[in-house]
Image 1 (cartoon, one colour):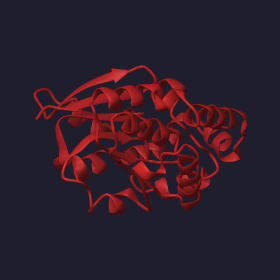
Image 2 (spheres, rainbow, N blue to C red; image 1 turned 60 degrees about the vertical axis):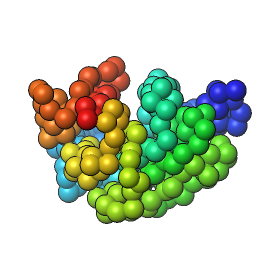
Image 3 (cartoon, one colour; image 1 turned 60 degrees about the horizontal axis):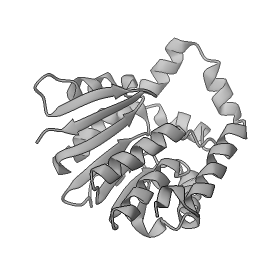
Image 4 (cartoon, rainbow, N blue to C red; image 1 turned 180 degrees about the horizontal axis):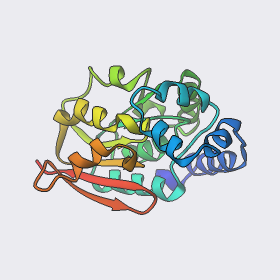
Length: 221
């Protein structure tokens, strides 16, 4: 049995994706109406993320179904035992990753969320999916919640929070990434610092852009 495609996870994910598609959040419409230059500035900001993510507290802003499946497949193939996620939201990506841990025989997923109401919803969704026992939800600013108390070795890192912080989060945890560890970064182009590190020739990482604005990187050693 594959946890991702079986009950209770599969019907739960279908409901969450459908709810996101049908829910209209005024803050998203307002953001989309901004000039492109302003949207890029906000998305790339290292300081304005608190305000924008508070405004979007009612929006799931999930990974796509395809990206969710990719997360599951990568975590399974890597035989991941320890996963760190930056940006929990309603827990849709978390469910995919936790399902992979379950099918890998267990493990720990540490995920961090700035907005308290989103952390609460994520916890409820993970409980409904029967996967909460595999997940530690850390509530608060990831620059603080991921500073201490991490396992010695991390197998996979998902970056899907405030884009401007990707470089800072990577620097915070990269000494714990094992050789061959995978990093999946959503919309990484909004953080040029991050892209310059993972794309550096002969640097510490191999990196490849995938469809859906996903940057997939692997730590060399």
